[in-house]
Image 1 (tube, rainbow, N blue to C red):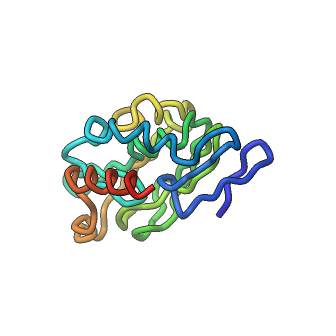
Image 2 (image 1 turned 45 degrees about the vertical axis):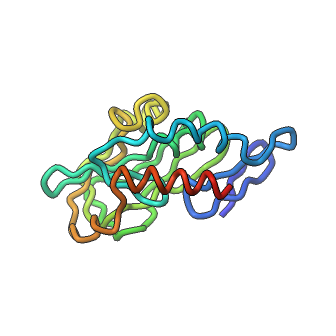
Length: 171
């Protein structure tokens, strides 16, 4: 998949988290080095995380889904959010929407299987909420989780911090 920015292409390897756009005047991993010190302070405890940098917070059988602070930092200023309709059903890892920023576009992937019960219209109207309050007012959708056992495959905050640090160090 490719993302377009001002007539140039940036490779996107599956989702928001690996979005890379490197202008000729910038070193490829400058962002990663800058972000490395913020890992501990930008991962919220009590959530489950995916390797594609989405999070889910459970309340009973309903999960609230959003993107992580790391993902919104990679995207930069988010200018457009496309979210699914209420009632839509998705399997784990299905593409359920898209985000566009001044840098590029990226797909959103469902962390678990379920049925959408609510979409955050505020995010569609004011996509910048994803940059300013990604774990609060910037949530994306709520869904009735149909396969709760899939939550066991996701990372808790401690494991996600380690995952981020390893990802940043490998770059």
